Length: 234
Image (cartoon, rainbow, N blue to C red; front, top):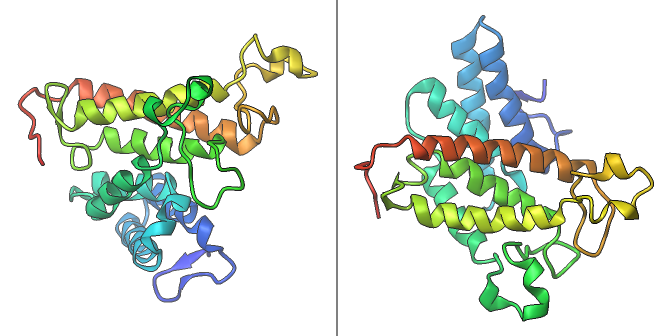
């Protein structure tokens, strides 16, 4: 009931949740065998509406669910990723917000790989850096979004960008050295902190990080098995 082709999204569904709804619609088309073609058609219409109605500057708030939905649609229909141009442009945009070692003083090197995102309360990277990291992870494994192979094209440069982002996510993740700051030390290990200076652990941070790591491993496996002469692209 969150979406219908005739009426679009239910007015009660906030814009920020429409990526999740789109992803759910694509999943529904896979789980239920009846009316599969109609369900895929509806899912595609929802994804297209979200891309059409969302300003480019706001697309990141819908990631990685919206990107996952469109990539999954491409896999189910056999056509290319319809939003490839928009996703590639978004990746270029968010990478401009990534901190490198040259951007930071020696004392701040723990922030390398994090993203300074507009709209966050903090001017420094927080767990919200996981969202663009998730986008990089998903896009790495899709040939139309990251062209080439481990021998040429975009794969190695994008893999390095993802590695930097994952390094920062690892920095946010509590290990045994930090566990003394929590009442339940065993439970805290592996949790993702709000930031390097805020030891709280939002559930969304750990959940999205788990998805990001899973997608990263799947994408790494995908690019590792690509033929060396895969098209490099511009």
